[in-house]
Image (cartoon, rainbow, N blue to C red; front, side, top):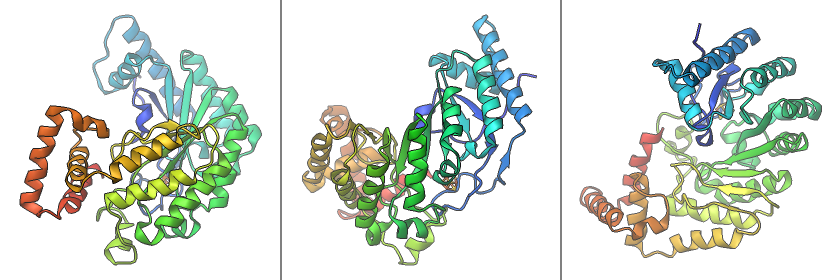
Length: 361
Ligand code: SF4
């Protein structure tokens, strides 16, 4: 049968990938900012089932390539992957490599056999899981085509990691990350600006940089926290234990973080809609000054211009500071800002933009 199973999410960079589900949910499932798999009991899928999924995708690919469009939910994902080259795959769900190494190898080998045009295979993984695998196991995955691992590090600050119940310490993050790199697999680490509020902002920025400096990942990706009553971490903020950072304070936190980064060759990316400054994109250390200059340009904008950008970004009508130079964007942003001033008052932009962000959680 030409059907297969997929999980709920993948990183933005895998929007055009085949989705291969090895596991359901997350074996940890306790991080206080995450509710992606909250209602899902963790399961490792049967290897034969995953193999059958890959076979189904290969058959659908053949049908599409021979000119017979497959117009159902299963055809869509393969069609989408093919329209973007059909050369990338993402292993799901939250910690897919928790599967036994032999089973992972079997699946990767089958993927190579049935979809040999795939040249990039990536997966989410927990630092703890990576720290529990041998370099030899991870290197064998690399041999079988696994090219990149995405780890949600979130922070390198131990007191904050405890508060958010990450289930990992900075030491585990370092061990897990280093193991991936030693195995020759590209590593993408995610950091969450704003995660610890005002109480942890400095420690969060500095320790996250410290841990990343030790690991030296290929990618450092920013993904700003989005707070709201639907995530368990909200309790810390609504009870007053933590104080929410404003957009400006988060940008200041990012400045401290970038300044403390001392990595060689890592690419910093701000490729998520929750990040205020989408143009923070560069290779370190060469682009460090340029990245800091972007932050400083934003921080030195007059209040109203800064708010114009904030509102426009949260409304999804621009990405970069320079986008405000476009007349159409400028007019649209002005209208939105005037509306916010009317409803929330001249000091209500932060409150309004926080409301606007909630649609992303
Ligand atoms: S490890 Fe990842 S998927 Fe699991 S609960 Fe934490 S953030 Fe969510």
